[in-house]
Length: 150
Image 1 (cartoon, one colour):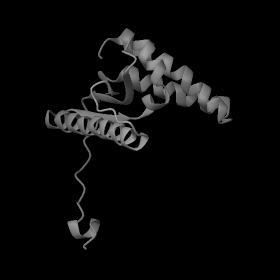
Image 2: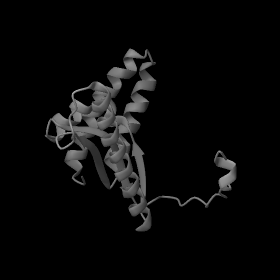
Image 3: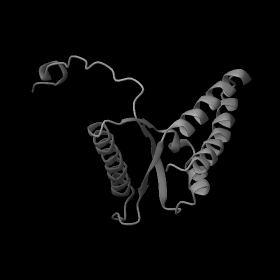
């Protein structure tokens, strides 16, 4: 989404929930306001917001909980994989992206605010735009440093 009024409405709705959760955590009021303000500002400032959702309506249904759970996890993994591909595509176009998982905490709020179908479960949100800074490429570890040899 790119519409400022929609991003602002979503940022405000999510901030209300975020503040409520931070109050339950017994954080000081000033800290709650600081975090909620930062969250709002990031969402509003991003040129593009993308919400990734899981939709189980076309997935298989099994008679047992074990396989249904596995089917759900496959769908979540597919969303995550699609998200990674989107970040790689954005990078290839010279754009920057940040993935946040805050939608997991406020799925119904996002559904209601954006009029999403009930079967769309928000999983993640991307902030996409031109990066302010481009970090230096870090030296990569050798495969044998990060893999287990069996």
